[in-house]
Image (tube, rainbow, N blue to C red; front, side, top):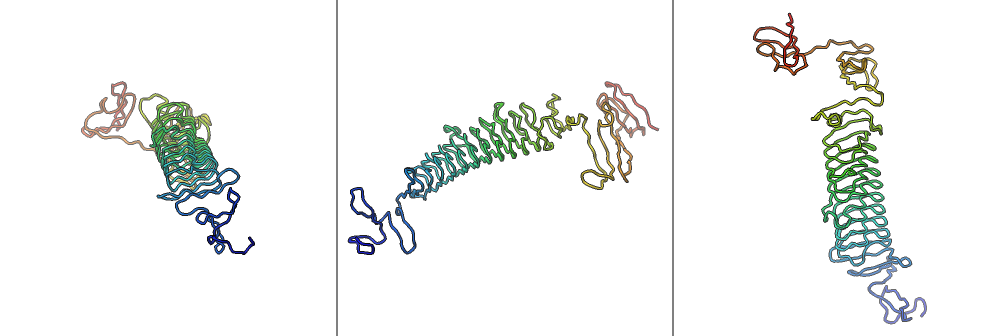
Length: 386
């Protein structure tokens, strides 16, 4: 044959090749070249086309009755029945069978998935062991790597989002957990639900103390990173917390990565003191070694360090063993009067009017008398104000 010469029995646009029997052959349906549009066509409707690089499939499509699957870089499974899956990377979506609408990018991403659906895994070993789960998003090396391992959870691990190196990388089963940041919730090894953490290392030890940590919200670098288990906590800031179980607390702290920085909290400090109930607490300032100080501003000339101001202060600052309520001023500010409210009642003061060991101003509306009263273990001591 000569180039440009006629081919007897040939089909337009088909490519001639040497058949294994050493004869010239053609596949007029699945292997053609369109010289007008300049594209090479592999396969036809309803068939599979594969491009190999050396001995490995580099790119192929698996069409079926419901939609097309696309795989490249030795990803995918050529015998699947699922649809609209996309995978790239060695071993990515390698075992998928009936799973559908999954997107995997990275070596071994969703490597064990079989029937799961609507998952997104970007990063090597992201969602590595999941088999049946759905609607999860993993971005980063080993993010959500062990979710649903060995079929745990029976396909009910849904709505989890892990973004960052190892984010929730050891979680076994769970629903609606969100971890953003390197190693965030990295210590979860069992079951957990409804946890939301933002910040590298945030909640890192949660789950190491057993139980099922649920409904925790931690925001900040290494926030609550030492808490081992517990639920229904809301923490904002860098306080790492105690190496213990903590439940039902609210904590606001600065960004310092320390277990001892001061914080405003509900439940954390009061439970530690075993008072038997929850309370809002301003903790001792371990950093400066002083008691808590609370300022309520009436006026101020700037945010931050105010030069001219008026404020009320509640503190142990001036004298360590005396708690003070006082008025303070700076610059052009004025020290204001401090008034204490009294309460009115019909009849003379009685032990039931105030707790033992406390004092009060009581206005007796029946007898038109006002008293300064102290409850001495149930015995009323009083002075009439005239």
